[in-house]
Image 1 (cartoon, rainbow, N blue to C red):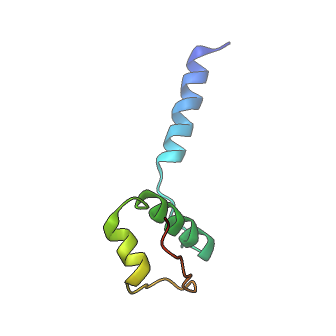
Image 2 (image 1 turned 135 degrees about the horizontal axis):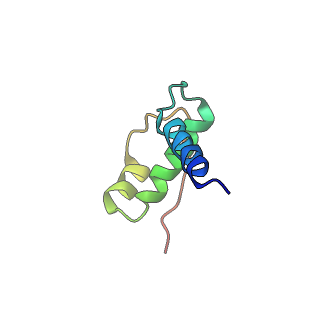
Amino acid sequence: MDVEQTIADIERLEDIFAVPDTRPLNSSDISAANRRHDAALAHSPWFKLWQQYGVCCRSESPVFRPPEG
């Protein structure tokens, strides 16, 4: 096993993955980001109020979620 070659390969891969992705976002990317955002803020009382009564700027149809409990 050539250690120097392995290190060089790893450094090349690191350089490749360090380049920012410049492709435009598609609807699937935006939906995934919205789901991650909602999951991260799920326990925030302010976010719960926004979900229930707030103005939504997303292109998805609103969904009624009755209060839990």
